[in-house]
Image (cartoon, rainbow over all chains, first blue to last red; front, side):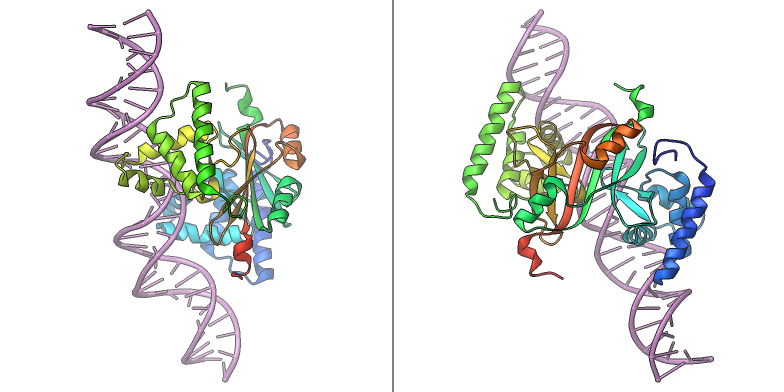
Length: 159
Length: 159
DNA sequence: CCTCGAGTGATATGTTATTACATTTCTTGG
DNA sequence: CCAAGAAATGTAATAACATATCACTCGAGG
């Protein structure tokens, strides 16, 4: 995987597989996997990188699939909601999920130089954060974990 | 602490103390604790809540301390850089640091209902995230941990 | 006294996200 | 099949967040 694990891989295959999985999951859950939603996910899978909403919108617009912001934001909301895509808070950007087949708490390694994003998983409500939440009576629903730094490719080329 | 621990506390005192600590730290490090920077920190301490840059700017503007965005963003950059303030990525907002006296990796509990923010600490590069980073050769420089959910006050009043 | 650098003031602009409302398309029960 | 309601989309306008740039001030050090 070029960004997900900072390694190369057979990309066309994984795009196709991921789309098929998403389609199957939507069918199973009676969700509408509409053309716009499908295409947005496909764009993210193909690019295999975090993209801003307006970057995605530009691609859609070039294809005549809607040129206004709400089009892409609605599609992204849907995809995020159902776990096909993650939002990278630090970048105000979106990336296709690398492990769409099972529920998980995503964690990201974000290269500050090339903006590559690798997705891994974390344990929820463990460690001090979980303790703090329990102690204070806070009910955790979602956890964002994002590490910023340098990817292997960029370590040599940077300060 | 009303938001930091979802509990009440003597606020005027802690504002004063935190400002004095910040002033001392700046003096020790030869940093300029200018009126704008001081006032921005004070506003965040008084409000004791995550605030958007433009919310802070509105307060500054009302006091004649600068009415343009760069004023507040520059002050926030300084305060974040030196650990007096944290940026809450999920909210695009800023909150005064609750533990300014020592270096730490902050973690936040963010109430999705009332937007209260509690700050705790986490262990850096431990657990699966650290393992993933090591395995792939990624060099972590900063970690963002933000949990979203319901604070004790809001649990009763929400779905 | 002069210069240099950090900070500030001000204008403009870029980027990200939402509100609002009209219209179309799906789906489901009669 | 068909009507009614729900879900999705099209479109315009605007809100919210952030940065680029340049001119100006002021204090520290030569």
